[in-house]
Image 1 (cartoon, rainbow over the protein chains, first blue to last red):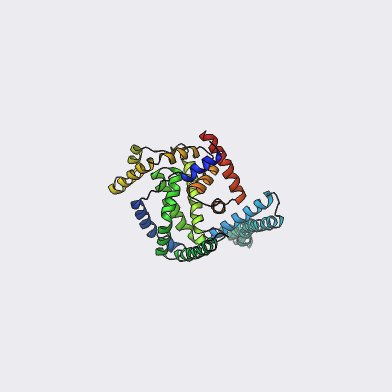
Image 2 (spheres, helix red, strand yellow):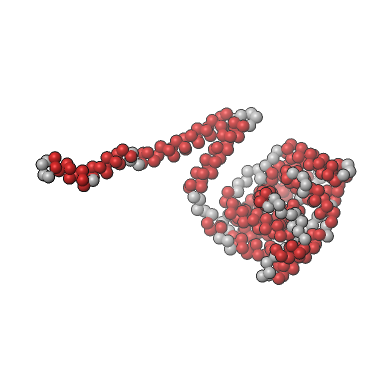
Length: 124
Length: 200
């Protein structure tokens, strides 16, 4: 068979044109009562951050892998990803106390230690 | 320019603008989404059916396509892709996912198998599916062609189906499949060559 004949065959073949009214009706009803539209406006910040991070990584990989590397985009994306990862690691250390400080606090507050300190004054 | 070329461009711009306006409304208004659904249900179902040749699978995938469209409508942006192409894209991805999940499943279901699959709760729906399946089996020439096309890798199946069964232009196929026009043309060329050899 020649390519032209095949193209003619593909163009002229009678295609099934089937409608399923019951499925169409049921699906419409389900979709319109699904309630997705009410939930849509609430965009979760974490999801947004996740998608942005994924987009950044994708742009970086594309920039580096493409035949004509888009260095500016790749570099900017790499910096953005590094910044986000850096912040994710650094932020908890700013907000939380270090283990050493926490241990010192526990020791100082313990009743035994306080009693021991009292004994220094000769109150045993 | 062809005699009606200018008018067809104007009409397509107007249609696109109306579609844009309807999509904008559908983001907040259920009834507007219903209008979009009415407009696109048939062609989505037909496309999925022509790719899968199974009424049951076409029903499932079409449902999934519209659930995903409704869920992600908020994220849809007019960046060189029409709503129609976006739906085709979702459908294409769903078809790929379906056959990856069910690699061992058959493309062709006989009528006995179909009757087992349908819920018995709705007898009229059951009859309708059986009639649809029987109607599908009447398109012998199409089924033979489809059998050969389904032996090709998915990338060739997609372009051939969209070009010849959905009557899409190369540019639109590119939009749907996120591919350049040149890539679509070469996929079509190679796909047809492979199909020709298969049919010999």
